[in-house]
Image 1 (cartoon, rainbow, N blue to C red):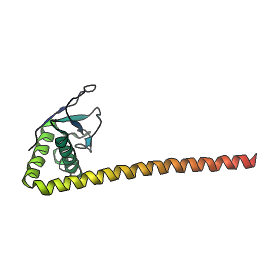
Image 2: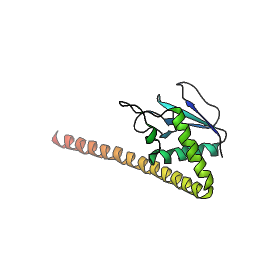
Image 3: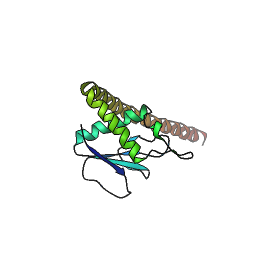
Image 4: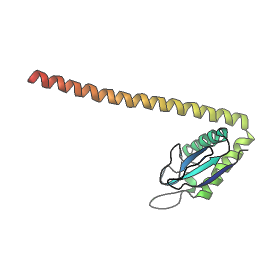
Length: 146
């Protein structure tokens, strides 16, 4: 079982070990992030493999709604550091019992996430192309009227 350190991220702090961030405020609490934001926790691991495993495990726990059980607060819901740590440890403990099968699931989620980013990139480029096409169309109309 991999070991990790989970603590509140302080803006401006840098980390030398492999790490990722977890959003801890709002309805997306538990969502893993590559880059820090003001309301996040940092997960520091010893190896890049542990980081990737925990990152995708956290994503699976967030999408599955396992962090939502621990949300506190009436206006802006948040998850505490301890509740987040407990949830990650339970998820990690359950994955170690069925290690091979869970590793396959984590790999599948990793591949799906990568494909999702690629498709989002294509969608963004298509939106830019659409705007350029529309602007070009109106420029041609203005030239014909003049």
